[in-house]
Image (cartoon, rainbow, N blue to C red; front, side, top):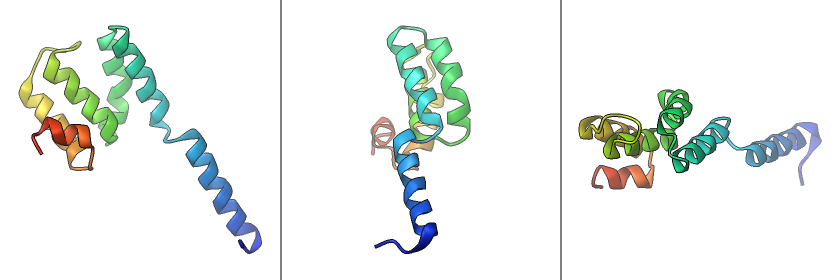
Length: 100
């Protein structure tokens, strides 16, 4: 049993975090939608802040864009760099991208 108000506050905070996810999650989901619609430049712009802040999911998607030349000039070196950033954080898709 949770004793006192502080324990309840922690539970509420955890539920809010689980319910709303990470603040970057909405931007990443919007970027995925843009990618599916073929709007790659807009998707990259939506992903960029999260990727630069170290979000592994955004980093991996930027890597995909460079690997396939989606909205950017195809650049395998830059793709690898972005994949590696995400892979070092444990992102499975990015680890596959770097050959782990």
